[in-house]
Image (cartoon, rainbow, N blue to C red; front, side, top):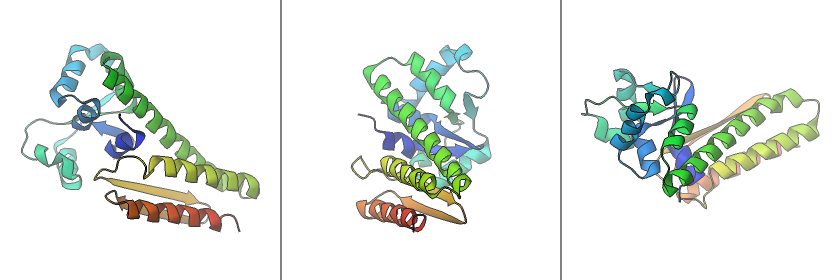
Length: 199
């Protein structure tokens, strides 16, 4: 079963958007990358501008340098494609297998949680005068972060960066998601942050 954490592990930031590279999309859907690209080629009308981004050579090189899972693309002449949120939703209308449905649900949930977390983080400083609302928002942010980083879900080797910008200070922690201990430490830092905003 595809989990939210698996989807979140595949998301990268490209051109200020959260995207998933075609090889990772294929991995999530349990098919070969060429099947994903065939689905796009056979349905061009479903993927207007902004649904899929074709990486530049520099972006591809950066991808290979920063993510071990893309090493196999180092010597490939193929230029990877990146699916935006809209592109992933449209792909879901084409791929109809049970695995595709399950994966699409996980993708929708992951994007929804990330959007809510971003909204909560943005709202916290706006409620400096209302500590009750601010505390509630911080707690919700902690819950969302915990759900996205839950150590009860499968752990994969990838990097996740969480940045909380709360009022006067920033909390940023990058985790190489390989051990339960590192995830536990991140959760402790989030809890400590919650305590600081609720004296």
